[in-house]
Image 1 (tube, rainbow, N blue to C red):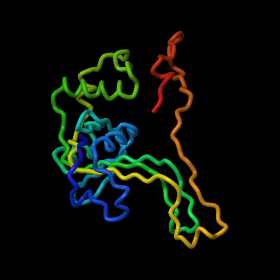
Image 2: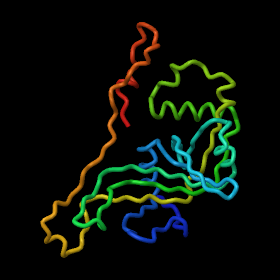
Image 3: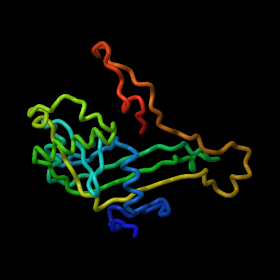
Image 4: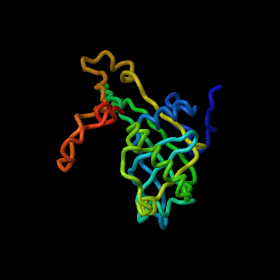
Length: 216
């Protein structure tokens, strides 16, 4: 049975209701497809938004950063808003009003918590790296205690939020379809380029399989 998040006053769509999705399958798919996110929070009654990387484990989403980060220090046990967006295309309509974008996005609300236990933190950070590059973490040098101390790991339950998706051609006013104006969609995709070796790589160190075959 499909699981859905409860619709709240913060998550219900005021417009374009048909683009809203509250099922976990859709929300999870967008989170898993785009590691880049933005986290919004409030410090001293002022709003801030920080870009970072996120990853999902079950019904929780995690992000990390420097232990010296004011953003992360103030996000612990605080209400935050995490968003992920994927641009799929520019929608070219017959009027400026109806130009749009095809996109997939998720907005989550919740209270952030800090992962305190060093073993749990280590395991989650390893899963984060291996989630993007399978098998890479095991080939890295062993983490120093200071590495973990210098890293803050925050998480949030996926309990309140929604996805918003737009697909398809432009939706013009009926009369405008008679105008001799080109309309359609310019697709947008994210591509992965050829890996560039560090010039300080030791001689004979070959590019591993998880780098050669990396795909988002």
